[in-house]
Length: 162
Ligand code: FES
Image (tube, rainbow, N blue to C red; front, top):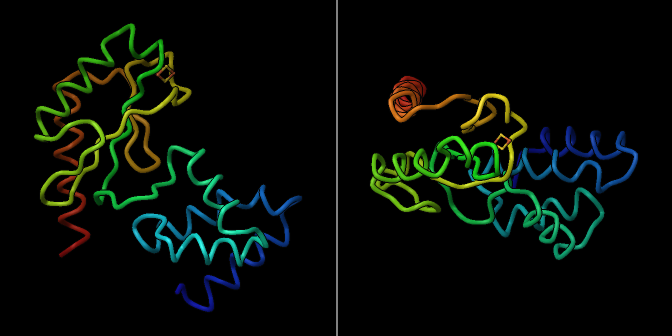
């Protein structure tokens, strides 16, 4: 259960949205941030906040790639597999990341640090191949650059956990 304060904040956002569904992604993302992923409990809470059924929230959650209905690592690495990125090495970038992290696409590292997921176009086609971690887009990602990004993310996480 999220705090009274967050519930109040989310109710306010829902009240200011044109439709409850419009606020759904916002609400799901906040609950996801709180729980680490959109747990069954979070789906029920989102449904209550949005005035929707849990099934309706479930349908919306499964539609959006950035909403996770199963546990994920502390950082989710989304690698674009749409046409522009695919054409300039997106597939080999994914393979390189998978080998570097020692997991298959869709997997999470044993230390719970990273989850690697393919995703649709991230709207950064001009700088393909692209990946996104958190809300940060990285374009023209070479294998070397990808390793630098992972190292920087590990360092940032270790600082926040100290
Ligand atoms: S195709 Fe990869 S960002 Fe658009």
